[in-house]
Image 1 (cartoon, one colour):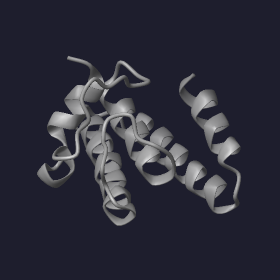
Image 2 (tube, one colour):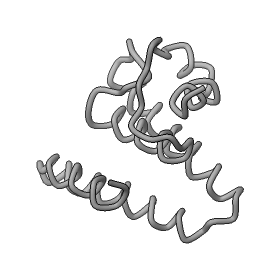
Image 3 (tube, one colour):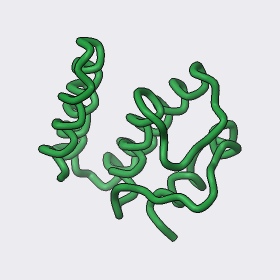
Image 4 (tube, one colour):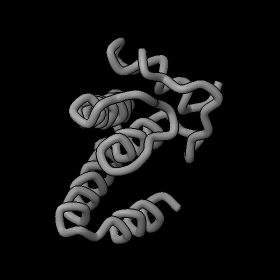
Length: 112
């Protein structure tokens, strides 16, 4: 099972109901995949979910951010939680300023 498929399974039922089939994620890590999918639900086209209206996509993105960060916190890696929280904040700031390219650069610089 891919990390994205695991995220689909662990998502809240209202979100999981929108899971797409034959998905390809960007990462081979649950935490990164959950947070990245949350980012995509907020700002772009998600890889693992389809058919949500804008409001549900925004809430689903928040839920997947929380899912990934909670899993990481359970592992006790609070430094990594801080890195991901800074990434989420930086991406939100870039998009609020109309610079989606800067958000993509942040992802690439942080996780490659």
